[in-house]
Length: 359
Image (cartoon, rainbow, N blue to C red):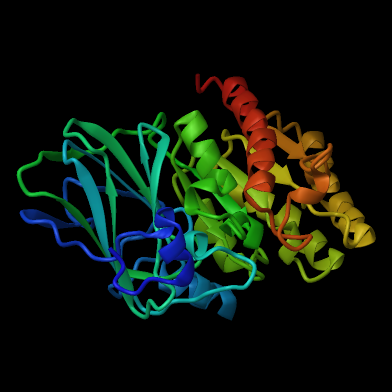
């Protein structure tokens, strides 16, 4: 257990969590090696997990160079009959934000057969990594998915299991190819309370589809280098969600349809979804101008005869009695906001897969 207890931990035992692994007979496994399956991340070039090749990031913008090492969308999947699953994490640094829980920005969470079973909480005095443990209370074979942090860079991840337990490759996704999500801080996952609550993760579990999260806070601007890189990725669907990061409507107009053309040229048969921003109350005029650009891209694609292009009006996500409870700051969704986004986007994705005869 944590050796230094805060005042609240002295009062409430449920606030205490394990920050060191001391079990006898524990075995540590590097997730980069079999039988573990990594998703949503590139092969490591510099010893750090990242989302796109470093050479592509350098040709995009300085924000992407930095945020590339943030592991949003990264997952490790495996099966084990260990009565517990621990992690030992190495991080280059530890970042905290005042409007986002450290469990989302820097923590990991664990699912068994798509059901949430626990979160690995980073201690607030973490500098270069931490340890954590989720215990099940029994020994039986389980299918495990662990989600990486949304806003921190991870250099190493070791899984701690009972040394006498079996460990096997994880369950496979429904399709061989992933859904590619490209966009802003909202796409990256700001400000979910834990990684599994980002909208892509929710949809991934509901539809049993792999995904790659290429959301880059403040830096999703659809430059030629990253557009061409994404067009060459294997994918079963592309989701364009970068409205928020276009510096102005003119930039969005100059890049939005161009991104569609670049992706479509290499991927003529996949569903392509265009989304406008969900938060419109702070600046309705700017949101309306951007939405008009995206709608025009959609109309142009339809006019070209594209039967596999879809448009989602983000303004509709947060309508209803809880509209004011969907963000942490008027912009970035909280867990409620992301759940509503996942519901709206997931419904369109389901229809798109059906239209394209993937089911």
